Image 1 (cartoon, rainbow, N blue to C red):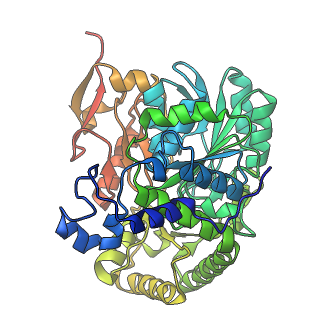
Image 2: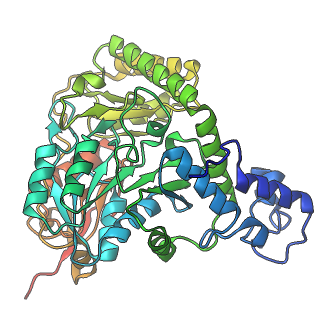
Image 3: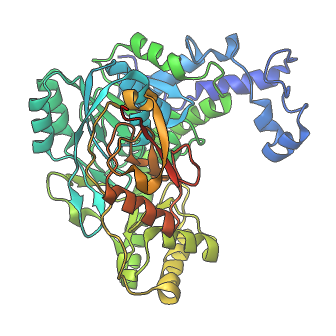
Length: 485
C-alpha cells in the first residue's frame, strides 16, 4: 500500500491556494466571502468567511471526491488504520445512520445494545430494520448501563442467525467498553458484520493505555466523532470501513442523506485535526489521560463523589474502561447528576458535558489545562459543602428493559393519537423520548410504555433534565399507536 505524508492537509492547502487567487464569486454562498453579511464577518472573522466556499474543480466535491477531498480521505484511512475513510459533515449521527443503512434493509435484523444513541434508532426508522436488543447489565450503585456481555451477544446471534450485523458502543458515554475483539470474531464466524459507534472513541486510535479501537479490533465499520475528542469543528465526523465493505456502495448510501453543499470549514477542520492527531496524538492524549487521572483522584478525595474508573472492569460487561472519561457519581452527595450539572453552570460558570439522574460527565480533552481541572475540583468541593444533603428520595436506576411491540419504522409511520402522559401506560409509543445529552432513548418508536418508564420521565423532568424527542414540547403528552376500534 502506498503510504501518504501525514504532514499534508490537502483540503486546507487547496483552500489557501484558492484564497490567494482572489477569484470573483458568482456562485453560492450568497454572502460572497462575507461582504453581504458584515455582522457575520465581524463575528467569525474575514479569513473564516472567505473560506466558506462552494464545491468547484480546484476544491473537489464531497459527493464524488477525485482530488483533494479524496486525498484527505486516504490520509484519514491510513491514520486510523481503516481500508477507507469518509469525511462526514452531518455529525456522527449521519455516520451512524450511514452504517446502519449500508448493512440492513426493511425487515432485516441488527443485534445491538438498548443504550444506543438516538441516531441508531433513527436509522431503523428510515430503513425499516428490526432491532434485536441485547439488554446491557446495569451497575445498580451507579445506575448506569454497562457493556454487552459476550454470552448475551452469543445468545442473540444463536437466536437470530439471519441478523445482518452486530452494533457495539465503543465506548459508552460513561467510558465503558465491551469485549470488542471477541464480539467481532463471533459476528464474523456467523456471517454477520460488526459496526461500532465510536462517537466517544477518537482518541483510542492514537493514545496508549486506552481500549482497543474498532478498526484494530477488526470491525467492519466505525462512526468516529472527530469533533469530540479529536479537536475538529462541531458537526464534523469520520466514517471508517474495513476491507469487507465496498467503498462505492457506502458512498452511495452516504449520499442519500448527506448534504451536496459540504462545508469547507468543517472539511478543512477534519483535515487539519487528522494531521494533528497523526503527528502528535500520542503525546497529546498521554497528557489528557494524566489530567483525567489527577482530576479523578482529587474528586474522590473530596468525599461523597465517586469518580469511577478501571476498578469497574470485570472482564466481560465492563471489559475495559476509557480513563479519559471523567464520569462522577453524585448520589452520595445527596444531589442528582443533573442538579450538580446546573449548579456548576449557574453558580461557578463551569459547563460540563452532561448530568443524568445519578452522574455527571466532565469531558477532558486536548484543549484542557491543569488550571481548569483545579477550578472544577474546587467547584465540586464547594457544591458538596453548600448544597449537599441526604440521598433519600433520589432515584438510582437508569436502565429499564424495553418491551418491543412493533418495529421502529412501522410505529413511527403508523396512525397515532396524542394522550396525556399518565394515560399512555400499556400503549405502544410512536416517538422518541430521551434526555439530551446523552441522547439515549428512554422510549423509542415501537416500545410499550410502562409505569416505571413514566415514573422515570416525570422524575427526570422534575430534576431539570433536558428532555427531547416528543412532538409535545412540554412532554405532558405522548403520541401512541391508535388501537383498533
